[in-house]
Length: 53
Image 1 (cartoon, helix red, strand yellow):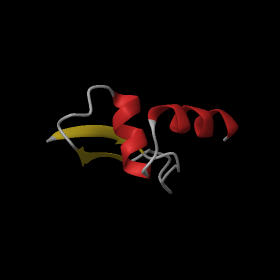
Image 2 (image 1 turned 90 degrees about the vertical axis):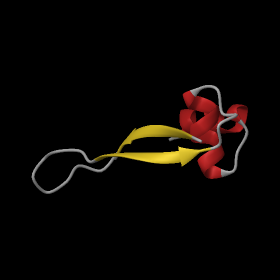
Image 3 (image 1 turned 120 degrees about the horizontal axis):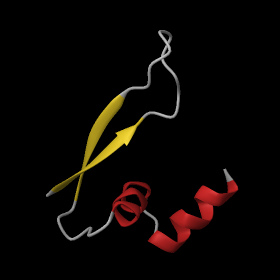
Image 4 (image 1 turned 30 degrees about the vertical axis):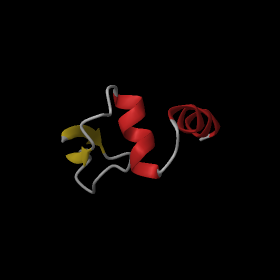
């Protein structure tokens, strides 16, 4: 098991951003792959989706 450290994109009422960790499979070897996994996407699909937003 690995942990993907994330920062919430939405600012909290006090102006801070919430940081949290998401568990991902141990075979996720880089952060893009791990983030893609959390959405059920391939790394290429995730990268494409990230550019559009």
